[in-house]
Length: 137
Image 1 (cartoon, rainbow, N blue to C red):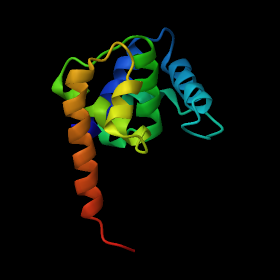
Image 2 (image 1 turned 180 degrees about the horizontal axis):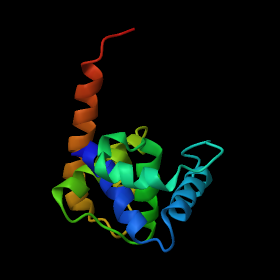
Image 3 (image 1 turned 90 degrees about the horizontal axis):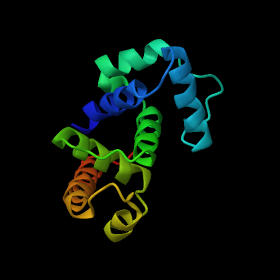
């Protein structure tokens, strides 16, 4: 679900933007640069936004995190299991150094911390499970 969410949140954010896809893609890239999520020198093409909504697994982490940050800053809140799962996964991955309590304290006011706690615990456990399954290199 977290992978599906990447394309979903970019699509949700892009639907709030006026103008052509090329301008929306440029805005997303500039916001990612401003947040220091990416260092690319040129914006992604506008067609990438459509591709990411059709193939969510192709959505880059930086694009999804940027769209999520912009949506949260605008007061967005998750309403479905897909959105809660994806938001928690991205939020945890971006703040991996924080404890659960710190994660909850840092949540925007639009997010219910009681509901978010369960989803964040699931994201933390999934990450730990994924890391424990990796073979050392």
